[in-house]
Length: 189
Image (cartoon, rainbow, N blue to C red; front, top):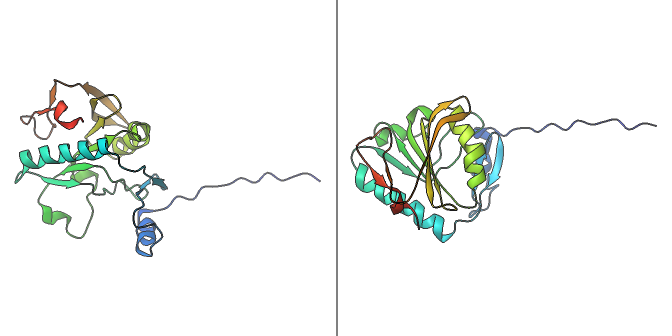
């Protein structure tokens, strides 16, 4: 008797199903989970370096952009039916009331910032592809492992055509606010 080969098929989870799982208490209260490409991604615990860098970026942006832009720290963005990551910070278009009752989508995002230590491979690969594929025009990775800022711009397909490494002692401005320079060192522990 011969064995039949069984082909297993993964079934992606939609953003709506992801929200329903949260509503029924499927996730533990302290569990950090993101939806990416239809898969639930368990995020690692936040260490002091990540906490510092996230706070430093958020504080710098709040001080600079208060009244000029909507800042959403640790919020979610609905990229498509199967992806709803939670970047560390987003600069969004329009007024805050625009997001009453809905999450931002790709057309709302001026900049996404991810602070990355243990999640660097995920942030450079899967998340970068998802952000580029859905038209997020600018994506920064605060790379704590190497003490640099990766600035990704000009999405084409699922890649960013321009990746610039900004080091300590150098400055960078978001494309949406070209006159607002930030010293990279301020974001690093």
